[in-house]
Figure 1 (cartoon, helix red, strand yellow):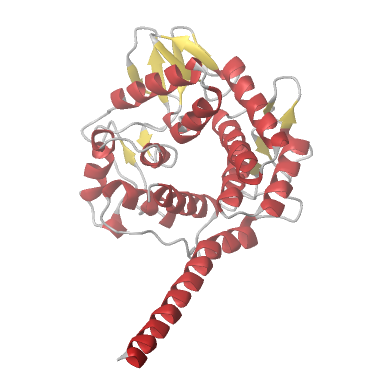
Figure 2 (cartoon, rainbow, N blue to C red; figure 1 turned 30 degrees about the vertical axis):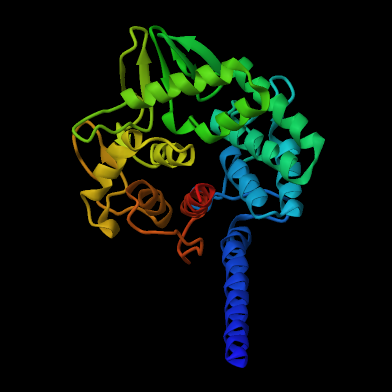
Length: 338
């Protein structure tokens, strides 16, 4: 009997060892694929679906993924390129876009708030994980610059503009709800305890809850907020729940939003066969894309609907930069809730 129990214990220990080994491989596999496809030796992430340009969004996504995968050498390489190439001393934020094929790669010096948020969030998490005060200092400086240059009070809301310049008009402002990176904002609030972040979070949550356009009650990629508080899809962009707004449920889920907040997204996506879900919906006309979501968008769909169980992080061979980024971020968002 004792010999039998020992044999069973040995088998169990071997099985646990295999599971543990597989878990480590699974956790690292997607990140290794991501680096191989999109990371250049100098630390620049290339957007393979957009003429191989680079932008602060991509640098921020990759810096976060490096922290989640405990990969400090890659993090340092990413941060070095971002800081040395895109940083603007005058406002303490980053030029949003780098076009390597052009004579002047940084023609548009404006920032993109979501990229700045992601970079600051990654630095905050890296500083805590690896005990590096310089990362924490840099994160704090970027946070303060965001509050100074992009956060305003308008129409009864405290909101973050998509960039320091170009988003205020006579009688309205333009916002992008996918730039409301709620888990990052909560991390900033937990670090600083500043009431400015708390009000920004609360008011932005209220704004998203009121961006219920069309029959499906979904936000559009870009939204105009009028001086009287009315919100409508922005006229300078197609009125779509699409490639930008798909990040809204991702960040809501990551921030542990209640089921009521997630309900419009889950209801919309449940109405389609999972692999035939249109990539975008015109929230005003009801017109739908004639092609389906990519793998990354479908991963966000799976989070919102909650019908697929644990997500995998193995990238498909045909995934471009944006699909792969959404895919891995959804994977880590789900892991953060476990």
